[in-house]
Amino acid sequence: MNESGAAGTDRDGSERRFLTIEFIDLVGYTDLAERLDPEDLGVLLRRYHRLAVSIMERYGGFVAQVVGDGLLVYF
Image (cartoon, rainbow, N blue to C red; front, side, top):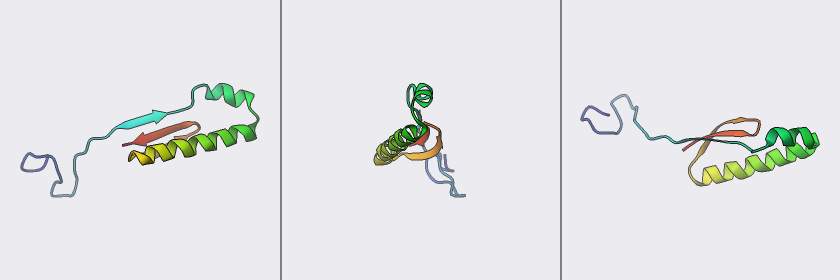
């Protein structure tokens, strides 16, 4: 809240915002990693990341972190 009690920008430039945090990953990734050839797994993971990132960005998301098959996204 700013000095007037309303949400918005304060004197120091800080502001309050609503934030949605999403974490997504592939179901069964560990099993896939054990069964697939490493090169095939890499192809699958890159395709998944490209698709997921493009969808998140389309809806205003920002990918904050990528860990293995997991993506941490902020909206």
